[in-house]
Length: 71
Image (cartoon, rainbow, N blue to C red; front, side):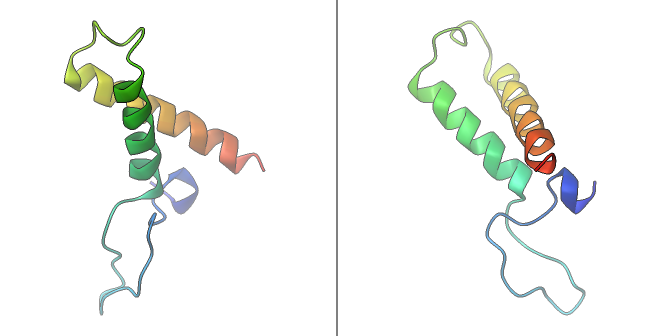
């Protein structure tokens, strides 16, 4: 996965000695926001399992990244 695909840290901080970044990725952040929206307004998602909702959230996050990268 490249940075354009959402590997960029959502809350960046100085990388460690090996160049690794900790924390969640931008893709994770977008998925978390989609999950929050589904939790507060579950119309249409009431029949989904938690795993299905998580999968849906990452689909939404991926769609957001595609649109973001068009800019």
